[in-house]
Length: 209
Image (cartoon, rainbow, N blue to C red; front, side, top):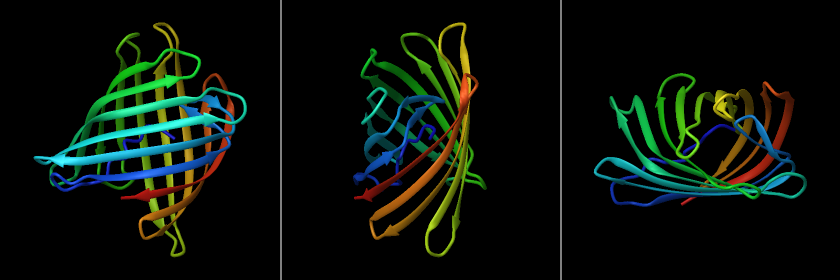
């Protein structure tokens, strides 16, 4: 739900990464239901060079029922400011749907290390000159047996030069860490101004290395 860079803090010249897999009832992207029941996989890598974070992520959504498949690649740079209070990232974001040509965007994201962890993102389509703005908040709660994360997203994306769509989503994720392995389950409510709201749920696993 929402744009996620998935970059972990790394020391200079060291490589960190994460690998994940998930089964979900639906896949929504910027308020659009891309596919119904799907299997997803994600790989993220990042390192640091001279105090600048260098990251690359690959995500794939493969529909097992109705809908489209998609592959998404994100790559860029990031840096912390004001003793880690503010983080800024920028780079490129390529999305390839099974029934359409690939979309290439550049993006900028700024997040603040404060209560609710607010972040704002801006995307610009290179070819069609369409813009997307997205804001996100999230908060973790330690409930002893597991971790609970609540998050919300509000965004607006231009579909054409004259048509745009406003979308929103809220999500609750319950996770449990076992050393470098994390198991989780989530449920989210997704909505936009062209359809009724949709409830989406999934289960998955993440591994850090």
